[in-house]
Image 1 (cartoon, rainbow, N blue to C red):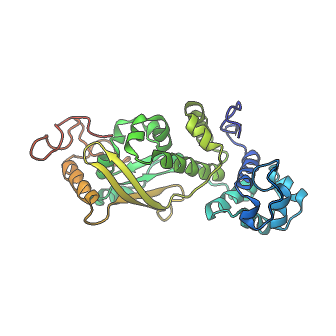
Image 2 (tube, rainbow, N blue to C red; image 1 turned 90 degrees about the vertical axis):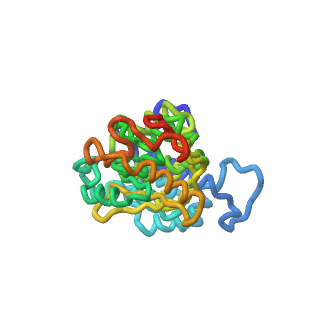
Image 3 (cartoon, rainbow, N blue to C red; image 1 turned 180 degrees about the horizontal axis):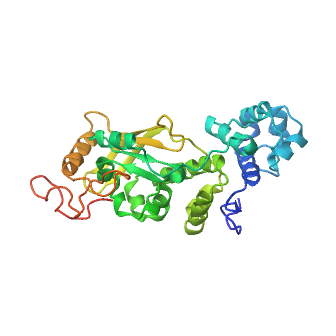
Length: 331
């Protein structure tokens, strides 16, 4: 792993180089496997390379060493689906990694999709967000851009509407905003996931100059991002559990689910909820009641924020335990 190369993002001509990406991805996947992991004898402790050798991987995949070597050098133009499947099995790739390998190895065979007509959630999704009155939810697009959100998302994650549009980006916030380290109890895992999502995006859109610019910026400004990016991990956003350290209600344990709306290949709807009867469910109820009267302001995309145009927040501290009006209570 070379963290100090001149171009840490691997950019070329306003995008990412698919051949370099393919080479590094295969090398890092091979390096994480040991012979005993795949049923091969360990012929000694003094191995020149970490993980499997190329010839061992080729043997497992049923291809020649020369053929696999060409592929790992970035030449995947004529590789068949059957060979990619065999290599994916040999490397024990996840479904997301298998899809990423296919995108990198056969970029010319993918149907080129036009750039989305706008970076906005469609009106029906905005209405759905508003209808989810007790559920923190938002729509995220390519490059981890936050496109729309509801009041409960504002109550939990902060006033994204106060940020310039270019800064409404999960990757930028996770790595460049110190407040995110306080918000996410397992910040390290959040950071790993964020980079893996961006890697998946990069495999599907290697010629996206905006994505390349984002990766370049984060690589320069964050050593942690640069290190994680060099690992070439990929992941699809799906579901899980997040623990948050909220400045008003303390620790929250929230389950989250991600959905791809029909007809929206570039966007995901992400929802958070707490187990019924749990302390986190009661905390969400309190946050929702404090935020219920905040009127919508600004354009409808992004969606209404959880505070009004004058910065008014939850009720005044006292018997209710809330902060005073206008205080900067959000993370």
